[in-house]
Image (cartoon, rainbow, N blue to C red):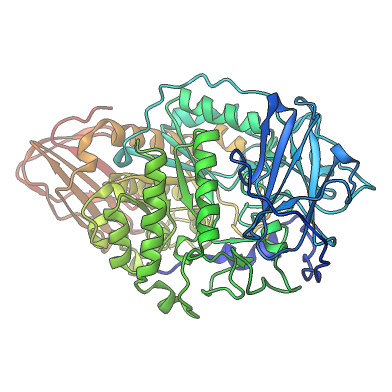
Amino acid sequence: MKKIIYLHVFLICLALGCKKSENPGPTPEPVVPTVSSTELPAEAKEGVVFTNNGTTAIVTLYAPGKNSVALLGDFNNWSATTSKMTKTPDGSYFWIKIDNLNAAAEYAYQFLVDDQLRIADPYCEKILDPVNDAYIDQATYPNLKTYPTGKTTGIVSVMQASQPTYTWKNSSFVRPAKNNLVIYELLIRDFTAGHTYNSALQKLDYLVGLGVNAIELMPVNEFEGNLSWGYNPSFYFAPDKYYGTKNDLKKFIDECHGKGIAVILDMVLNHSFSQSPMVQLYFDGSKPTANNPWFNVEAKHPYNVGYDFNHESGATKAFSKNVMKFWMQEYKIDGFRFDLSKGFTQRQSNDEASFSTYDASRVNIWKDYNNYIKSIDPHNFYVILEHFADVTEEKILADEGMMLWNNINHNMNEATMGWLGNSNFQWGFYTDHGFTRPENLITYMESHDEERLNYKNLTYGNAAGSYNVKVLNTALKRQQMAAAFMLAIPGPKMVWQFGELGYEVNIDYNGRTGEKPIRWNYFDEVDRKELYNIYAKLIRLKKANGIFNSTNFSYNLTGGVKYIKLTEGSNTVVVVGNFDVVAQTANIDFGSGGTWYDAMGGNISLSSNHYGQNLLPGEYHVYSKTALVP
């Protein structure tokens, strides 16, 4: 149950299904020119700052130990001799002022380091890719600037003072309480055929109908290639153009807020890939060099892919905080889900056991980042960790207000398939983790990283007589039952896209991270639409009835007949279901007799507190002593 499922980090490079950048090669030996040395202007910051109504740009690069940097771009016809940058006295920064710019124009640019290495700006908000941009059509990204072919090579940055503005409409959005969060994890690429923010917006009412109140977008900052899950990042301030424009993303977030839906970004700061200029600046041809300010020479843990950030480095801390602040302020997002947060460690480990043990430095790193985020936005901003570490460590982080991912995929899938020996999913309860509050544990049955429940139902499901889990209608009914139990567990929950329709395409179809079939036709199929409707009803019940966040509960999730019992004041809710493939008789203490209301339809009358109904395989109920608010 506690096993970490990080398979994507081993397979990103193998199964992106897209074009990847070349290995950056070794950082060339420097050529030493004469460069003037002056302090940074007061208004300068890393990247580009515009002054004089956008006609002047101050461009800054952090490159300690480098001898010279020149700024090349459209503004100087890509000349390496006309725009030598000034080095600060401490040798850490290079900067330059560029005058006589057209504030409305886009300018492509790069840095030329030590007269040999051309890199893009790590802080730029847009890049041009000479290979992958050719696969981005006009409908997705209108009037995309042409790459300066023949003038340079590699990724280039784009600056523009007077960018097209977006006027936010929904300034009064209030984030849902953590306890009531029902998050929908969504990959823009595989959600609609258009693979854009705008085409996803056309399905927003579908998500409103489902009742989710948060969307967790898989990574949207620039990653290598186009067809990726996004866990191979390279530029952290630039939205990936394959999904649309910067303002398209802002509109998506704004419209979600208008529908009462928070937007959480999946942020990948454990590692970066070879396209990153921060990797390329200090690189020996196969790995970062020891003087790289941001990256470890060798990864410190066994699940790393790409190049491993050193989060004890001051440079990495500053960069990471700048990334967080940027997305919070520029895009008005509501939370981060930090990928592979357990990897923020400088303690060497070579196996899962040592990687997961308590790490005081890692705890302090996360406390620092969490406090910084709260200093930027103290209003219920969600800090979510994919951590899967020692329970003592996770409890400390939870007590600081952070939220931890909690995977019950394996045990719940055993239950839905009808294989009972390992079907106890009580790990979904926050008390099993030693947490003091339910809102700090986000439990899910499926995520981008887990096999789809219904694939295994239909492939490996159990059977007895005429009852067969491999039959679609039967499998979908059992998915209803699983949803009823998961959503009855106190605390926030997450649903992976199309789980509410019983999506059953194998996770390894077309390669693990490759494109998957988009099956909106499922919504027109009766049995799948019924599953969607049941999800919607259960989510409404969770949000409308505080008893589903009660801290007074009991359960028995072993065996075939499972139940969860919640009590709040004078009301009690009992969720009961038969996960076996044969009929079973329940034996549950309901606490009182009389009339019990079934939120799924129908009532029962008990002559005593004992519930001893015979339950058919796959049969489930959501009983309450007082009728629940629908």
